Image 1 (cartoon, helix red, strand yellow):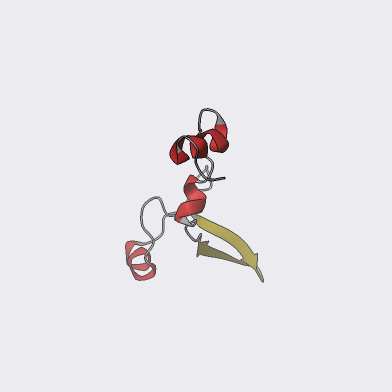
Image 2: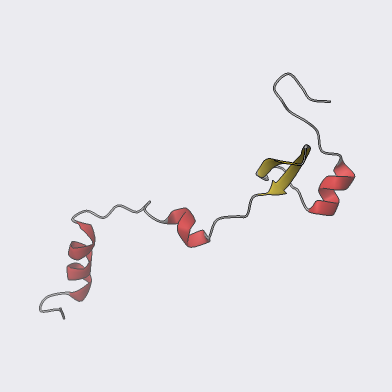
Length: 73
């Protein structure tokens, strides 16, 4: 049964067999009139954190600081 919010319950036996865990994101498509759900692949760990670090002065300032006085260019 579909709830008023469009929610459905996936039976535990099926969740266990397919490795669907709480919080798992699913993508739904229509294939020849059938509703098909697929697990969304996890993002690459590097992609997941890319861009979250802010550096005062930017990367050039950070590299200058790491290189120290008279550092290599």
